[in-house]
Amino acid sequence: RIFEPRYKKMYNDILFSGARRFVVADLRSDPDSDSVADVGVVFYLEDLHDVSEETDGEVKYVCDHRIIGRVYICRILNPSCWEDASTYLRAETVAIEDIDRGPVSAEEEQEEKKEETDVMAGLEQLSAIQRKLMVAELSSNLQEHLNASQTEPGGLWSLARLWVDYYDFLAAEREELLDDDVQDILMFHGEGLEEEEEERDEDEDEDEFDALQEDYASLVGGVYSQDAEFFIEDLPPHVQSDVLRCEHQFEDAVGSLMREQDLFTHRLLRSTSHRQRLSILRTAVRRESQRLTMKETLSKAVDSANGDDQAC
Image (cartoon, rainbow, N blue to C red):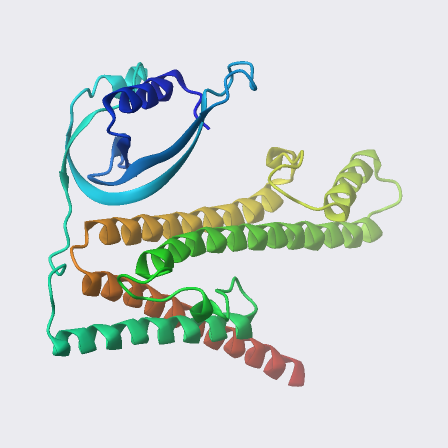
């Protein structure tokens, strides 16, 4: 759906020139400012419909694309347009070509097939661990739809797309954990207030306390979410501290995930061989399996310690 004036112009230009292609690149964040990543993918315009009449001019085009290649972005030709967004960015690029596109020996082909099998086995093992821990899970029948090949439909690039999406699933999972943790904090402090109320002297002024108790009851009784009317500054300082600690842990975890996602994507786009991409994906899958295994081990240790405490 194309509605920004600068991108309307871009589509008009590529249609007029007949090229029907353009580069899409991620933004790369640094401490000072955002910038365009030094690699991108080439989109080819397959189909385009002018829907300006149906949308009263809000949307100009609805388009379908396919990816036809990758490029290094050498330099931006009109950097001033980055700030004022007066038109789309134009860049000087160089195509990224694989170095293993020619014929390979039987031995090399066998090694490649073995590495593809290893990647799929790693994904299957990871799926089993996820299922056991009841966390965000890759499909157990993944191999029926996708594979790690270079040329077959549903090949390695499709697996890579799935893995990039998996990082987003992990981020959503951590957001759910944040909601649960904040709910637990409010419940815990709400119960503390109830105990404190029982110990209060009858001659104390209870109006302010009752109001605070009602606030807790409404927070604990509802479902906390980032969209709710929830103002942390209205909470007592010690409760604010606990909630902020959870939020900071969430931000650190999600920030780390997004950095991993960016690094994984960047490495894949810069790769110059199928075996190099297999190695990148295999490493990512192995690291995630190790992370979940450590999580399971820690959970068992905590459960065991709690069981020992109860026995005492």
